[in-house]
Image (tube, rainbow, N blue to C red; front, side):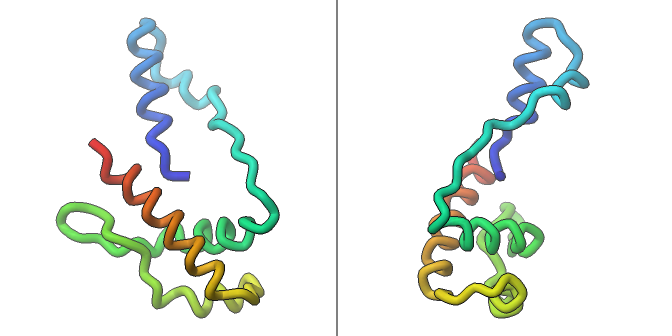
Length: 99
């Protein structure tokens, strides 16, 4: 969800002398999600516009939106999903802030 794949694809195409516009024809890698992880993936996706930002870039998700998202998605085991969400958040931050 937060890989910099398009830039890498454009760069690879450029190195081959091909136009970057071809990048739209390359599909992202399919990722299998185990059923027990699906609730956290849905919450993480729903929070995609809720990143807190600093002058240096994203610093974390805005947890104030969580109760509403949990309610809208019918999440029952909120504690477990929250822990999974934090794991996904850390991985996304590493990718988003990678240079």
